Length: 239
Image (cartoon, rainbow, N blue to C red; front, side, top):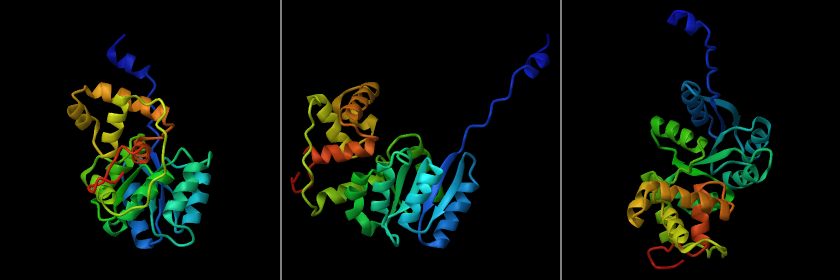
């Protein structure tokens, strides 16, 4: 049997399912530009468009997207409350929410993470950054390592803020607390490994255990745990 004969016996692979994106943005021009960009990108598809927070919650239940691009300021219901409802609803909880923000919205960073957001992206980001962010969040990773997001979190932690809820870290080990504190500071796995003189594989193991012990859905929720557990302090030393 020839190579050609063998090739005809192999069934073609089905194309992978595209990452399904829900757009939640009240400004039509911005929403349309996002839709054109995403739909023109192989492997990504827009499955719904919402102009209000309430519409975003409804469409998230209907379409069960992989990623929701969520503006913070929207009529009817803001993006933080919409995020909270989407992430708390068993029907739509599988969606990862990527918050669209601007520099003057730094105070919403903590509230967005607490509501269940998996990351942040500036509205002024380049098209390549937007597409990469969607893929990162869709893969189950939190968008916390990029410089701009780290700066947002750092500025928030250094500024005036309400006292956080107190979280009991329970059976989290001392080493895991060290890893958690560095996650809370926005470090990547490789940076944590270098800081603690560990392998990247060991860091990933610690993070996996932290996710399980703290019942966190992703890395973004570990930032909340680090803050509420008193492991992250601002520039003034407050925890």
